[in-house]
Length: 247
Image (cartoon, rainbow, N blue to C red; front, top):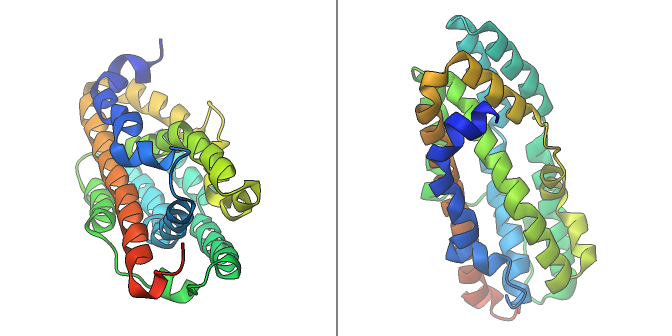
């Protein structure tokens, strides 16, 4: 049994259970969801997601630098290397917003504007997500950045395939072209960088398994709240006078 399963997962499984039980998550994968709501959700998800994704490379790099300062050489070097793999991922989200908006504007009466969507004010969950990263990097256990990344990656692997399948059912397979960010994160292999780094981290500091899991669980909880915000904002936009004819 891996150290992740033995030492870490028992403390994070309650948070992970929400992926399949949360009402928002269940609605997003429900084939009966209104097409306009699902389509608008993904426009919100990618628009808001830039705020969530743009700092990731810097967060991982800074966590690596702090680990090096604390004498965790292998962990620190691993994080620095991993940070380069995250470079430019927010641009994928920007590109996806543009494609989804163009598709929406061709088919719907209410016109959307990419620049306005990208300029939306962040929700409480979005700000909390950034604050968690910053507090982790500046705290006593900056290596917990790995646990945060690990849980968000796991969320993509668990929820992503169901979301993509529902998009194909409800909106048509052509819509998947505007979901490049999600498609890439669903296709990660089981031996991903975060999985390997979690195993190494627990070998170095098994006594911190619970603290690591708490950081991962908090990140997951915040991200699920963020997805709820995306759905709520999408529905509110559809109900607004400017988009009343969008459905």
